[in-house]
Image: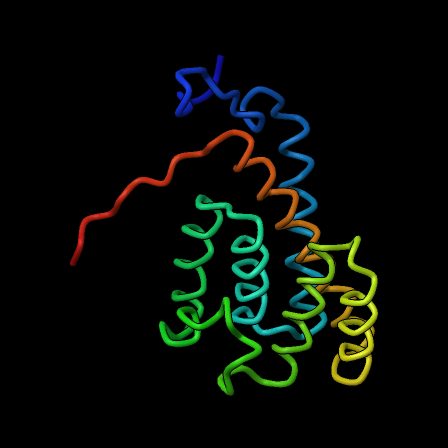
Length: 162
């Protein structure tokens, strides 16, 4: 069995390893989503902010680790990463980023109809149709990957300090 030990002494199945065809289909979808985001003109930093915000909401340590490093490589600042959970209370995000973050949160909490309607209305005023579609797809994709990692308990290993 592919997996890791949980806090209760039982093994978790790494569903990505156990069902590789399904996981490869997800990674192919993620590649198509990255392409759609690029074609819509979304900056890589914005895509990573969406990935991170959704992963924060879902409590996915593995994806937070991966996408924090990706955001930093893309040029994101530590200040903005640090305040991302409270993005509404800051002035460090652009209107485009704020609309994308709200839309990503609404995609992650689809049962909250009021949140969804407010986020979509803001997005319509700020983002193009291509940008709206790309942001929603980025949020859908990272939500799926969050669930794979959370349910598999993918480990986050430390890296040496520099």
